[in-house]
Amino acid sequence: MNIKEVNSRLYEQGIMRNMCQDAIDKWNHTLSEQELIDLWYDNYDFAVINHFPDNETIKKCFQQEVLRKNNILVDDEWSLLSPEKAMILGKSVTKIRFNTYNVGQVWVRDMSKAEIYVRDNADVTVCVLDDAIVNIVCYNKTARVLVIKYSKNARITSFGSNITIKENYNYLKE
Image (cartoon, rainbow, N blue to C red):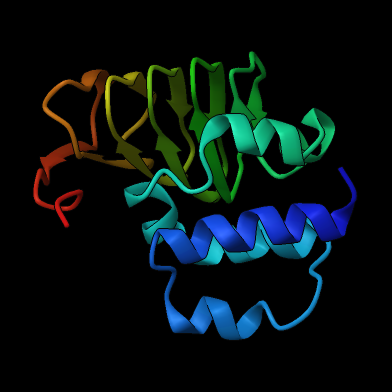
């Protein structure tokens, strides 16, 4: 699929899901793969709430190496090191490590499984949705992890200090 076809397919799906005017305005020409991914991350609330684009479309529109480079896993098994942001989708399995003063946000969705290890002043926010399973280990008191559980079906286990788990089941309601 060429980049014009990718743009057309994603744009049409976005319009059908009531994409915001700001995103529509930024999509005023054929965007590159990287620009499409950046726009998606910039509008992660819309993307997560609407499962936009769906996982099969993501896999058809983007090569796995491009997704991995941008810390996006869809039905993939891959480890990440201190990503600023990451989307773990489908039936992915991952280990994510955060260290030193890294700050990151991770979304784990669908039926994915993530093991997240945090240490040494890292500050991480983990959003867990759908039927995802997340295990978090925080190695020392100087690191911090905030976990937001958006689904009653999501499962979270944790070990260590400075891990806060909050529930927000209203987020995904339209």
